[in-house]
Image (cartoon, rainbow, N blue to C red; front, side, top):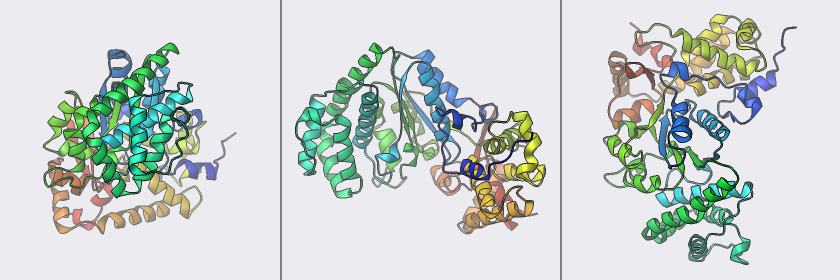
Length: 440
């Protein structure tokens, strides 16, 4: 009997803001592994470094890519794989604790400390820090934060940090005041976190049979690229100037970093200070075409599977292809959706989501073209004459160079990055390729 499409479930599964949780067996049914077409298996490299090459010595690895290309889903997969290898993993979204428009190194350190101590408490490891606990009490007094401190032992470390974070996240003045207080003590704070949280935590985890502690800090790539000083942007200040301190936290670390740093003159300094001599891993788009313009059949096949898996997660991949007519009026409409997305996963789901808002499946070609037109018009209205010339140049050279061009072209999703055996190459967002500016 032919499987029936559950419209509401399909609609929910196409939500472009949703991150698949790999530990969740239901979510795992929707996951498609694009590693074979993306040019390198980045997640396997990150995992192998931790679990096989350096399980006993802390590592610090950097991960980046376009917003919406699937980094969070891949990091969730890394989390599940490393757990399976016997490590305790702390994954968290830094946007929960930090204001991305205004971040300092001590903010990141406290966020990591809070998340690690909370995660350890969840498995029955309750820390009783000495100097760090006293520092937090001093901060509470310093900020005149209304926290009831009945007895130091009664209020947990993560709760203290959570209260401080909640108080300062929405107040630039309090954040500035706190940083002035903490900045001279940064190296001491780093030492206390290592000795009183990370080292003790690892010792207790070892007693429970765990091989080590891994911290995955997602969403730091969303740090605002605004100027920090007249000479330094906020990403350069955090990840280059202060990179050595962020690297010194004594556990396995995976940081997401802004893609703009890959186009900065500071990329080598970043690699050496925060990456320990190893360049960041970049997650590119799923290719829909080769450099020469020929269709990338394997990439397209996997994008089709991504869409169909959201509709029929319990059906075997080969059998899903027999169900295309349940979702689209014909195969050409599905191929048009995959191709026009340029392999940007969130954009593909966003266009599909818009179609489902307009009509029930099977989705017609007319409905799809309406959604594509709306998306194209939302992009075109932001493009200046100078930027059209830059886009023409990218089409000719398949290259993007310099931080300014990154900010103009990639951050705005006017241009996508792909990888192959020859290295990195760039192409304009396919929806822009259909504008009158690119017609012969």
